[in-house]
Length: 625
Image 1 (tube, rainbow, N blue to C red):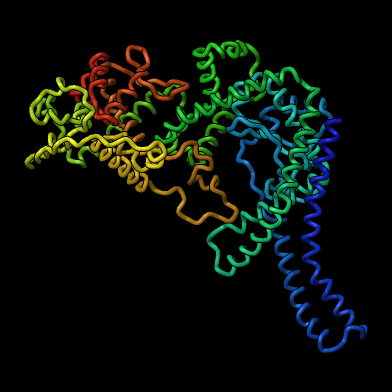
Image 2: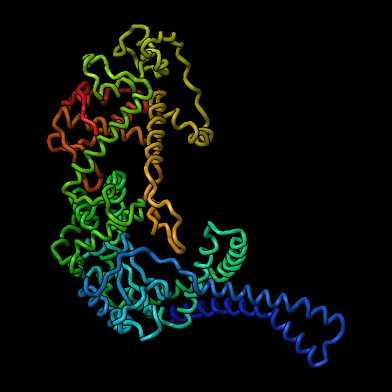
């Protein structure tokens, strides 16, 4: 009963969308109908006279213009290429067991089988309509017109796409889930092919997708003024129609989803409850892996080629740390869903490259500056290189700021890059230190520090007199403090030297990005998307790092370089936290708070104490890139 109710609701909403299309057609034909009446009336001698003659001269050209405009809009809506989710297509030869499982699932649900299967680097699964002629490649000479899980669509004209939608599966599901769990998760998705096969629902979906594609075509830049005016009119009409049928289309999709969910109740219902827990766990592990592990490699011009396998390692590590996830690790003895693929390694590599293009904007093909990296080589080729590159950039900015290379603890002949240089520059001297009192004997009065340039004077320049300490700022009202938080963030959380160094790092990174040659200089071809050019990430993982975050990363990288070169530490990979420093085989998990104390408060004491405890010598030069 629930299946019929959901399907009937979806069909009713689909008919409402089609009625909007019919009304738009009627509005376009209305001036032509008036013109026909006027012309027929004149030929029969009924509508004669100067008034009717003038009406014929006015209405007939308007009717012709409206018909031409309607024909152009209809042609654009019918021919515009709807948006398609970037996926990795999986042929039946690459995964016969997976196709067989989906075919059996469709038989149990008594619905048409999907026409094809594709993978997406995301934790989601859905059906996607790709019946538009532009979505399918032209058939070969020996193509018999048969394809898909059940033999595909019937014979038709050239570039005829299968009628059934394509099943898109999240690639992390195949590696983390077991075969039974994947079947349970896909059951309500595959069940959606039943309502999708109804002619009214299919026509309504095609109409909505055509309107959406027409809006995208009208928004394309780079046209002549005449074309822009025509496209503006097409876009306006398409937006009006989209707004008119938006609510009906939304309710139609809800009805389809309700009918599919109700139909899937009879298939693996108990296992689906357990599998839904794995969906949430896989999503958390995938997000953590992309933001903490993959993103640093992408920024270095390397892309991990086994991201899906990394999800298994990350979630296994999570189950080891978290007692609440201990039961999930016991599933690893069962058959994983990736065994349904003939070559899971090749599919994982293709999905990993697509993830890099979607979330970071990398090139479409590997190259000298965009090469894959496996997990065994990640610490040496990504972590070590990242830290030394950041440390080199930090010292270049210090050179540009005129900071001297030698410090009190380094001999004059040792002018190499040292951690002591960074510590001395960022450490804020106390007010009484400049007057000759030892800093260690000062009480914690909370007074502001003196001018940092007074104790650090430049060579050949006399030191400026030290100003008297300023009184502490009066407390602000809570809501006033919240309003000023964005503008005073750097002032409240960083010292003057930290702010200057962070600004220098931001400018240096901007210059490096500007010096990088663009991937595509020529204008893209018509119909080319951002994914095709590879110039921008379609779905950025994180916003650009702030100046404070950049400074924290660079100072941390300098500390790690000093630890590797003077204390025998090694770079490592933590599946949940990304690049990590290993000292005597243990993670240095308490480093970041000490670096923040140096940056925000100008207090090097916690970091110096940690360096002494770890056996790191900051006065020794380090090797940079």
